[in-house]
Image (cartoon, each protein chain N blue to C red):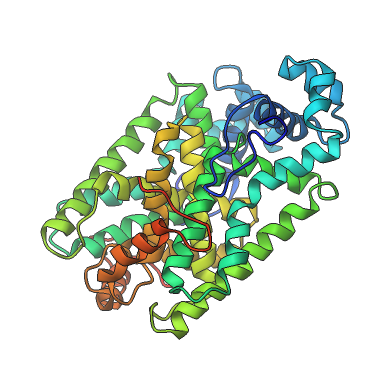
Length: 226
Length: 226
């Protein structure tokens, strides 16, 4: 459907097409030359498209930037919705981490490159750091809820969240660096979310129920099986 | 002690000094210009040292390259020694992952940059890929031993090792990217090793004993506490 194709769905899967092509090329140029120095005509040239085609998908360079950052918000959206839900913390944590891996693996750019771009161009990419800080905060709340409910062992929430996000980020890096197969993304997302969540469970035997709940879907966020 | 200062010790800690300065600068130049195109005189200039000083520490460019890759072998050395030891698999796995994080955090270069350099210069850096494959193989053996002994839950060893190394690598990236404090390295290494190992334990309550064994030292590889 024109205009909406390629929008990240709740599964985190980004479909391919001219819109994604443009986002990939634009993200790479913003990283290489800087946001301000990149012209729409260069994005068109590098995409092999006419400038009018670019404007068909994105009415401005700012809109392009917002779309790039929007691709990076699937797990944040999940965390926002799930932080206040009644389901067990383990299943909610699993879902957010799962979507974090899927989103980053299927994004055109390695997350670390996007982060580096945001670091070097703090004005344009201010939302990037805010999004990250909010994701950390929400995940900390979910972990704390799991500890308070006795689902999780006693942990330092700060350390756990930093480590869990290092895990999802390291997983996407290995995927991008190794030109991983898209068919393998769900398996990697499951492995990462499983490692982080299992490490917290007071009862390791409860893992299958956690994964089943995550796959059945919570508030519209379903983890597909590997 | 001249000539040996800065050699990675078994703790994985690399002390600083001119030798490390040279390694840092050389690694960055190899990554930027390529190994063959980098001259010893450029390494000297970029280090702010005389060429004779460079040759005091490294007799050739090949020796420099070997030293850079040697910095990356602390966890492999640990894995080689520990794979055949009688201690519980959980403690052995903890020690290797712990040292993997420490080694990569304290290395002058982000591990991913070294990996990229190895990828782009396969002839000079052939050992890099072989080292990585060997580390994966040894860790797979340790995980399989833990499963066979009933210490670990049933897992796909391949997935677990890939995920655990993504975790240690993602942890070092977050450290390098955030200009982490060296005083915090042991804490991050503990958090990463703990997450990976706890996720496998059939009895979560056995973790303190695992960590205590790792800190007491196994075959000379001791994990220092956070």
